Image (cartoon, rainbow, N blue to C red; front, side):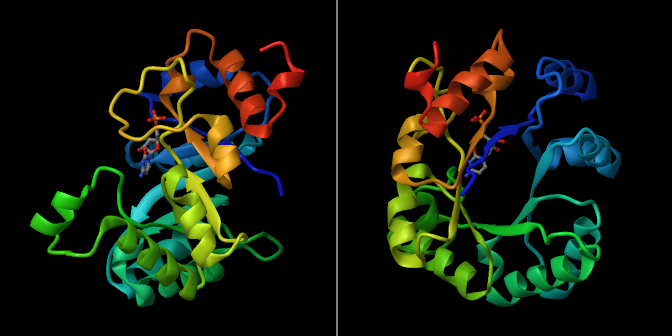
Length: 242
Ligand code: C5P
């Protein structure tokens, strides 16, 4: 199974994105387009990136009534994206509707985009779960419960911390995809991420894909940093000079 390193395109504007991608020359990348970029630049930017041969994870985290999510997913599937997500908190019916929408919107002969669920945001802690969301269960149990709900709804996987991967794969099986942000090299600035994991640790923990933002986008040499992190993620770093 090919395991992607997904670059999070969290940049201020289109010029900065183009400047960053220019450093990668002809390399075909897996890129994460978040709400900020999608709301700013819309479908046109996705079409451009697809034309350049890149794969796209549209990190749009839909959460609404099932009918609205289904209709939105049908439209978004038409963009030819490769992966998209919803909040598991929207419930099983909503997740099933999202999947139906994606299937309906996928062009004949194309592969349906992978659909994954956000279990609990990494900005949510145990106190917030209890005090603000009125959820009294341990955070870890909530994450497992949501992952199982997502699987029962037919989704392909979840976004989670790499540290949660062994547990989730234990409950949902080895084929259930785990897409893990919060990745840093040992020497990197952690910034606002709380529980970071190195690419090599994410590999050992069994992540399906890692999402890397600032370690690459703020690097003075983004292409070299990408290659180094990719080699570590793929377990090839001992064979390179990095
Ligand atoms: O710059 P950094 O590597 O921390 O970026 C991580 C990316 O993954 C950001 O786009 C962030 O929004 C996203 N993300 C996350 N934690 C989640 C879900 C998404 O960091 N639980």
